[in-house]
Length: 249
Image (cartoon, rainbow, N blue to C red; front, side, top):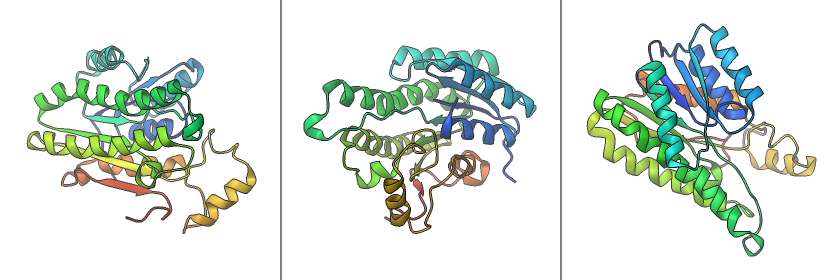
């Protein structure tokens, strides 16, 4: 069993969906967990209460993932509450899908700033305490869209591909201080976002996926928990696809 007792984790976008599953999985493995959320206070409060029901400390911080100042304030709040950051999970993300010729400039910018720039600011803010501790685990949540591209998602695919590049560059840069940086690339996962997809599209996705089904948030969280653990100490700069075989590279 993966043991994260005594560890402190920070998950961006941790109040719902995959982020919430990651928060709860890390807490079940023994970590105290801080997480950011954009605006749904009720969901954040419920998630924090569930972490505390598991006997771990929780901290929910409202923050805009796009802002450097917000990331710095977020990490400062975690350090003040818990004294350290052992694990960073960059999960916060949005979609603004449209075809290239119809995509608005703000939809391009918002997705890049939230999904890629936001991850960079959080990583940058965590770098100093992790370097000082000479240890750390960083897990970036990318996507199959960043590996293979997706029609109607030029902004999202670009941001998620950029996150893979950031993962590899940071892994090389931080390895000498015992910090690992990896990415998890989910396939199609059952969340609030995907449950409303038309049945015909859901059937098409299932048919394209070798394992023949959607994934669950908990299956993504399992991969994150492994990469956050001591058992993954010799793994860095890698992209772990959790996609039912959808993208094989």
